[in-house]
Structure formats: C-alpha cells, structure tokens
Length: 344
Image 1 (cartoon, rainbow, N blue to C red):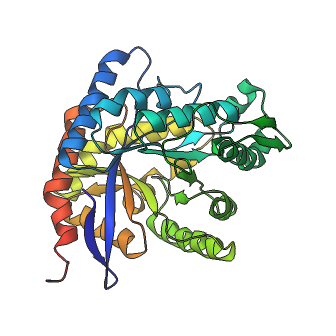
Image 2 (tube, one colour):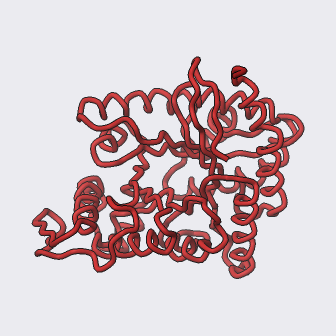
Image 3 (cartoon, rainbow, N blue to C red):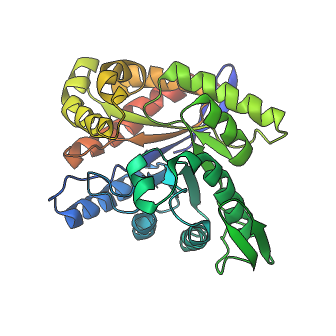
C-alpha cells in the first residue's frame, strides 16, 4: 500500500501497517483470538498494507501472547508485509537470547523483520526478573550493542556493565546483511535523543499528541545530524484509528473499548491515561470520519512521518469493527491523501 503523497510541495512515499493488539481478558478463549489475528493479518495483506507488528509485555493483567512466537505463526499469512515488534522490552531478556531469536525470525520471514525495542517502564516486570528498574536505560544501550555485535561475522567480545561476551557470535545470522532495522520506542525528550544514537528510527507511540510528536521528530533528526548519523531511515508513528460516517458516531462506537484499554494502562501507575483520555481522543487518536482522519494523517505527513502503524482493535471489541476500519481506510481515507498529488 505504500503510496506517493504530496507533503510540503514534495512527493514522499508513505507506508501503512497494522499494530496488532494481542491482549485479551482472562478467561477468554485464546485460541479463538489467535485465529482472529490470522484473519486480520490476511485481510491487511489482501488490502495491500505494508506491515504487521506485535506488542510485548510480561506479567500483564490481560492475556498477552509473546510477540516472537506470534509473528512466526503469522509469517505464512503475511505475504510480503514487514513483520515487527512495537515495542519489545529488550531490557528483560539477555541480549544473546534476543540476538538469536530475532535472527531466526528474520530468516523465517526471509528478511522482512523490523526490531522495535524499548527500555520498558513497569516496575513489576523489572522486580520479577530481579533487574534494577533504574538501570533500564543503560541496559538497553548495552544490550543493543551486544545484539549487533553478535550479528557480525566472526567472533565478538564484550566486557560491559551488564554483559560479558568472549569471542562469540550468534549461531543464526539474520537474513538482512546488517541485521534487521532497529526502531526505538521513547516517550520523553532524553530518551528520544538517546534513540538518535542507538536506533535506525524513532517510533512515536500511539498515545502522544500530534504536536508533541512533530516537535520530537524534529529533535530526533537534529540529534541524528549532531551525531553524524544518516537521516535516510523511516519516520514511523503508531496511532489508534477508528472510522465511521461522522466524528460523533466514531467516538461513540469505539469509546467503550478504547477507554477500557487505557484504563488498563492506568493500572500500571500511569494515571495519566485515565485523567487525560478525553484530551488524547481529540489530539492523539485518529477517530472520526474519513475526512477528519485523512486531514489528521496529512498533518503528520507534512511534518515528516512516513510510516504509520494503525491499531484497530482493543480488548473486547468485535473483530468485524476492526476489519471495517481497515477496509474503510483503503477505500475512503487513502484516496483523500493521494488526491492532492499534482498531475504529471
């Protein structure tokens, strides 16, 4: 579905993917949900979407299948779409294990994997793994260094604060010669700046407001330039999206599911998601008519975002509502984005 779109008097190629929300209430039939995820993936592939990504947590309040295994299951149903994580908490698993599992996924998908990672934030996860919560930033930087080192040809050695490697290499090397691209999830200025030094792209999360996302994308690029790094990588952003005939109907239909999901996040010492939910609905989420959603996406394209990951399902929501949004986006939103293209 990658399409040329006019942005600030220049033509840019935009990609669109699906961010699967594989979190389900305790007691639900997990196998039935997994079958539905296959159907969503097949639908996205048939409609021409460019990617399907999974989420990651340990010890969540909802049933949350682990993303590496889930994505491996989806490979035969994904066509030529990219597969990835958005994001994987890379500070809770040893980088040797991560390097080999990601390389295996890249081989299974024939070089279609994108590794989206973050430092994590839930103290419960870190405490259960016996890892100091305050060390997560340093641990992420070092883990990525080890992962990339193990993907290289020849032996790799590392003597760091957290990890020691003596002349080893991953037993499986990725299909992509330099390894899968690494996208960094980050939500504050300090970590966005850090992402410019350790990642191939910064992935903006679905709950950041559009103006904040635009300003921090500029900051990320400035930091890349200062570090002498290439600006050729993508500028991805994840967004909650739901479409209906008009804005009021869209909000009314999706609110029970989307609000409940953010209430679940608030339980992780993130009360912001309860108190600011209504503000996020107006300034972060893409919920509304095709005209409204197209305008909001065009605003993000104009400030530089060029890879959109859409989350169209939240716990408890009927899957046919998600499928309708995927279909309406391709039929009613995408044409509004491309109609601004100049005549040849």
